[in-house]
Length: 124
Length: 109
Image (cartoon, rainbow over all chains, first blue to last red; front, top):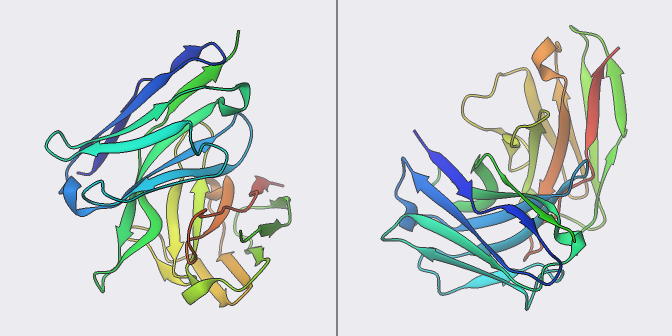
């Protein structure tokens, strides 16, 4: 059974840092691109970042570029999101998500599996 | 960046009825790489449809997707009580950001 379990969220003051983790199991983690998606309270879904299978390629939303860093440890089957210089507008539930492999074997950016999310609250 | 606009914002229907949800893109979605998700309160989203019309594994056949280019539709034929939720479309055809629509809330009438 595929499982993604996020951790590391919490209450943090503006300007502070947090590192989120996403522990993966039930599939070969190193074969999949992974993404982070966030959802502010009562709002919609917003893509944050993605990383390729070996960690050599990363992409970020403009709103987090230069402040957030996505990484992965394939030996530990874990995805990370280092968040620095946090702002009130970063308050959200953060989900890690695994991309879909289609029946044709193509990796596409639709999210087949999601974690349960971890809440980050940025407030003084 | 492709902007996705979903309509209506809220849809009020009764169990057994047919639901039609719309997602319009500000520019053509490459390869019709358009997905639909269902989200219930306190839960993560669930993938329903990918590639505009392909149903994800384990999704009941009352859910179907259609459309191409800039206009896409999610249809739920014969609403079940568990179908009342918020639905999001997402495009993943172009380079990031992989944008989402603002959501349609499907509520019981």
